[in-house]
Length: 122
Image (cartoon, rainbow, N blue to C red; front, top):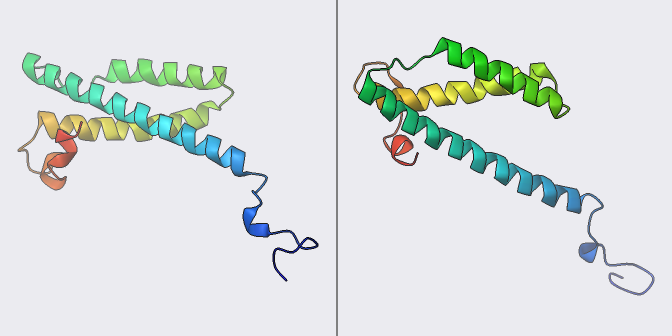
């Protein structure tokens, strides 16, 4: 019989990992909110680049940010290799967003293949 004194009700018991799962969910929300904020800054940067005729890709800046990202990762107990993979994904999305602003009508640009709402929401 379910729910009797001798048999505990398993539906009301929490899993021993529930607290950790809640914590991970909260951290994931923070990570995504910060990535969204970073991309909003990239939108502002793209607009300034357009206004001042600055090329989208700034190789020296990318190299500096990449090195800084690796150092920050290592200081936080993460490997440089992981940091580089993560940075590559972040950089690719930043370039896609900047391209949508800086080359909106160029054939083959991200803008021509992405929904317009992607730029407006940033």
